[in-house]
Image (cartoon, rainbow over all chains, first blue to last red; front, side):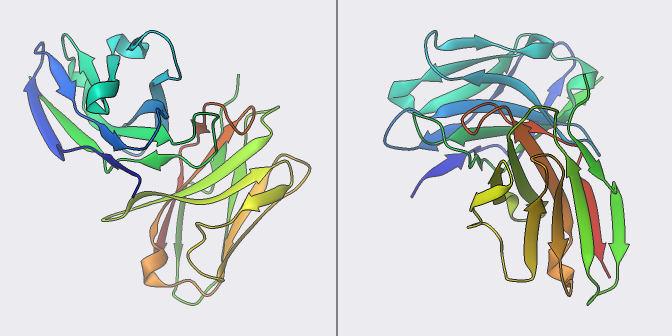
Length: 115
Length: 113
């Protein structure tokens, strides 16, 4: 079955430390890939997306993600975390290479940042 | 420019009552989506509109749920005879076309007592 996995439910890092959030997907072809962030009481904000081309994608707020076809992964990274990055992060896929409309979301990773 | 807006932001209702949730998509976005975010279930797709028609209603959990979209813009999600398991955050998203990036609203938190 098609699925998106975010293995880490919670992650805690110190401010200034580097961050990597994992996302793996299970599909036959390369889907469109997204990372969204949700702050408490807020909707989902798009951080970055991958459709094709360069496998290292730059996003907003200093985030980047790398698509690795061999590992079916799309991990999110940030070199130095700020306290304001504390939020929940969702990986999502659009499973059709031509684009569909039904995003499949991972279960989310909640990030806590220690001062 | 304005993003996706949803109203109300919070709704508390009694079991058995009907509720209506509203979504105003980004101007010019032809595609509109409803998702539900609940504890233990994550984010689930409910329904998709292209213009005023809904080609895919496969995510609606029961016939108590319905949605419409008028004028290719505003959409209303209606839940009839609400149950406690309907308690969740209902998120609306829109995109320029059905194969483009979806932009999400702040959601409506529904609590059924």
